[in-house]
Image 1 (cartoon, rainbow, N blue to C red):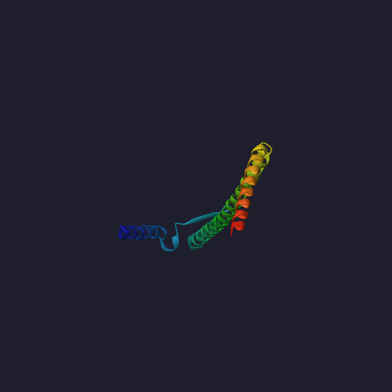
Image 2: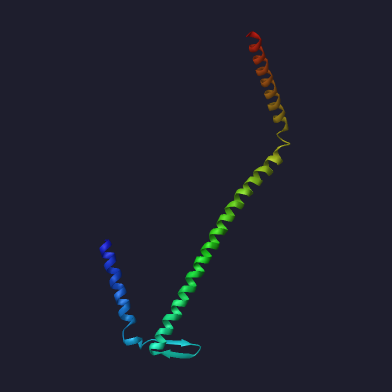
Length: 128
């Protein structure tokens, strides 16, 4: 399949070259610029230069747009992460008054368990 693809590309390029150079110096080539018609070798060269210039400008534009879109998406990702963090903080701040009774209970349990650990540690040291 790889050889068939290479042969197909070579044949298509040969057909394109034959069509481009149908007659010497492309006498069938006519370029119309601002109402003036250029033909013959000069028209052929002018057409190739204008087409190549257009392709070059298009390639430069595509590269610049790709860089801009990449930076845009990276910036949007950072903004989304910061936005989600801010949303979490806002939700926590909104729920904090409602969680006060639960926080009191958790604080009392933590205090008593801490006090029991201290008392058990003191008992171990006194026993030794």
